[in-house]
Length: 258
Image (tube, rainbow, N blue to C red; front, side, top):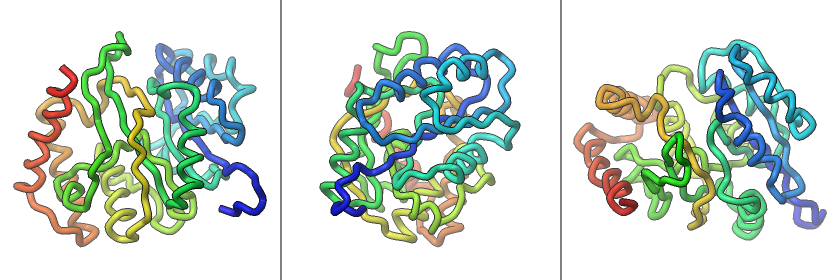
């Protein structure tokens, strides 16, 4: 960051989407309504066939870069977005998710400048997919530590904004895992590279419940196996007992919101 230029930092927001005509409008509008002046908005569509592309085209004047082509899944799409991003910091707002107000990015930018951090993250509300006023889980990033990371607990990925330089240093998201490549990326950043981070105690994103990582008991088993493998490949010690310890902490996030 070059404060002497008095120019607000450029923040790239990447939305990935595939066949989500029902919810993409809300995500696009959420970015458009942000009051921050230096946003680069990138939309990566996996060649949708349900009308999603047509909805995106209606918002095209508010989108800086739009790509629609088949990909190899979520993490391949994220890598494409990062490749095309020119912002100093990069974050993700997936289709169906939306910001908690119009000042989220300006608030993040203010704290990035104040703290001089490599990355910033905050809190996330997981909501009912049909009734987004109904909060199912409050996912907080407070008290994050390497011990929590060993347990498979990471900062809420949809609230995570990081320098592009860091992504260029640590490399792409692996496409090896079905649901845990974001965890593996966090291990590389927080453990291998020891990035400087700042936690903002503010809820910034609403995420609709659902998706691969929440796909029942079988999905949780697969996720835990991937977490163990992701830690091992980066020489980051953990074990299945430690990973199991995250269960009561995760349950508490539901209990406290009931």
